[in-house]
Amino acid sequence: MSANGPSLPLPVRIAGTGSYLPERVLSNGELEKMVETSDEWIAARTGIRERRIAAEGEFTSHMASEAARRALEQSGVPASEIELIIVATITPDTLTPATACYVQQQIGALRAVAFDVSAACSGFLYAMELARHAVGAGAFRNALIVGAEKLSAFVDWSDRNTCVLFGDGAGAAVLVPSTNGGGRILATTLGTDGAQAELLNIPGGGSACPAPPGGAAPRPAVLAMQGREVFKHAVNAMRQAAIDGIAAAGLDIGDIDLIIPHQANLRIIDAIVERLDFRRENVFINLDRYGNTSAAAVAIALDEANRQGRVAPGDRILLVAFGAGLTWASAVVEW
Ligand code: ACO
Image 1: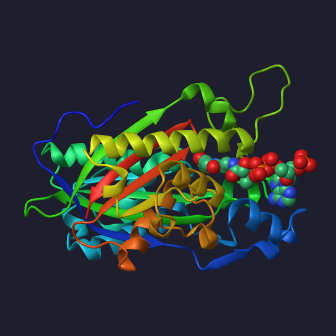
Image 2: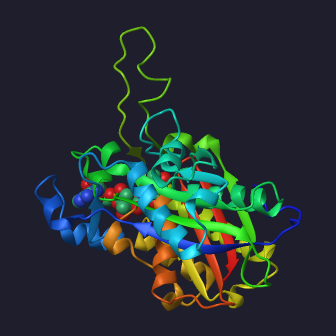
């Protein structure tokens, strides 16, 4: 577990947010025709009603770039002045180069250093932590961070255990030094437990695939998950990440105005909120419309909360996530 660390020379704030969801809506009713499931089961066990699916030829980088354009517009920083781009994704356009390189070209941020991070659903907060340090240390004048996923390309559409859970989309934020005493990122907490890697993975598609000589079949490049086990870890890790993040910010749970949790399962969110003894109405939820969009989920929710006026200057927001790795992360932001 890595916590907040020493304070940075420059405080860093979020200057703008953006998000993008593909047009195509896939409802639970449509899934009933694809696998043996029901709207009632999916809604009761997960809270999900529908999710978005990227069009053919619409890649992770395209969604990332659209979310990035919207975040840049809100921030007032032109793409040509962006110095660092970090894209969090587990569904890159290609194994190499990084999806961030495509985004750099697509948005015209040609001065920026660009690379990806792979931390599944925690990826956007991992990217935020890296970018906060890069900007806060004065090494880069600003940073664009993006969480973007085309999970529909890595889901086994005949596996009801997983295909009902995931969706596509992207969210982005622009980070700049906080020079006017306004908002800032107060603290972040990251954690990883590689011993649990097998609980949730995409076994194929990497250098371990195809299988070694000996006749074993290549491993499939689709998402595999031990749902019940992941559920238990998710509740414990997100609760602890929330507690650690709030403590690192020098705050109490009562000081938090809004929680923006990873959008995997409403029952996971309810369990965490109950254990934290927090007000349910101050928890931002959109998983009913988008399902689990992994690294994009917290980023999309942050942008929707921002654009819906759910956050005001001075508000303290807790962002908290959990995903494959296993990984977890939290950030406390003063808006
Ligand atoms: N429709 C109908 N029945 C189903 C479906 C479905 N879509 N999926 C599973 N079932 C059945 C199972 O086969 C099982 O039947 P059985 O009892 O006859 O064996 C029954 O429903 C119960 O299955 P469980 O797996 O125990 O159901 P559970 O209540 O745990 O819900 C779920 C499953 C939704 C996957 C839950 O475990 C979960 O959300 N886990 C966490 C997922 C997560 O948070 N992932 C985060 C990271 S994602 C990332 O990093 C990319």
